[in-house]
Image (cartoon, rainbow, N blue to C red; front, top):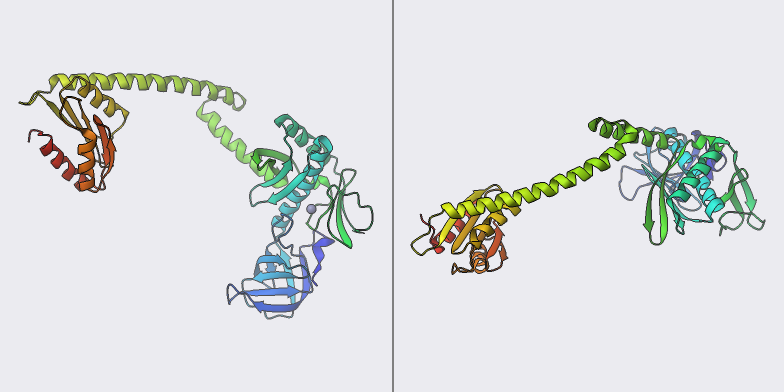
Length: 396
Ligand SMILES: [Zn+2]
């Protein structure tokens, strides 16, 4: 059974231990799975990730809780019988801040709004807790304010071992039998927990609530504590300053300015669309006027365009609406074709294009007067254009 040194002292990062078992790792023959008589390395459990660091100079890649024993996965073949271990202190302290912050937040959520925590996840960038029940944004602001108030009061956070038969007065009942490790925040919370925590709430640092999501009937609250909260606030400020500079506006006035700009942009976009439709209609009419009809009375035009957008469809439809007309548009990249015909042209555009597309490996279709398709290559487009010109009697 491994003696878990972190149970008594979360601040211990350097320790010595005896190796009790070493075995090659199943996934890689160069790696070793090492068991010690005692360890300060925290294994992944209860939503908190494992510690990283070194053991006898080898990198600790993973720490696994196997119940009675803790396995350390090393990146090399350990030979010593006694080893020195060192934990990455920054990573551990970060986990302590987030984890203790979670206890505090969960307790405040119960204290203020009777909202129990269902689960907790400590991620590489952010942490989340899932809370049962529905809370409003203003209520969460109140939770954030109260949580930080308790941080400022710097209340002691203590570890005690008590027997499960006693009245433990826990926030959430435990199923553990025998000795239970209890983490208390003075006058606020008592939780059964095997994780690593700071010794007073002041060390949690600022607590910042962020994103809210509804997940399977629960509320998922993203939060950050201590160093993470400061780093996030710095990144937010940098991003907001960048936006404010782009708008040449003081930071606090930028949200209102952005709303105004967005409204104006939507208005401009509506105007642009209207004008571009009008322009396309005018082009279609002008093109019809200057196109000479063939001996059969049909006006034919073939346009090379950059892309087959809404404008070209409007131009094509305007051209063919006037009657006895065929309009073809080709775009090179991506290779695509549009065929519009008037109802009295004697041509069914959907049928003709579909047949020619399937002969050239293209895809698409449409109705009797307007059809469109895409081709696999410029050569295929060229081939289709030639067949189409021939079939629809375009002048060579
Ligand atoms: Zn805990």
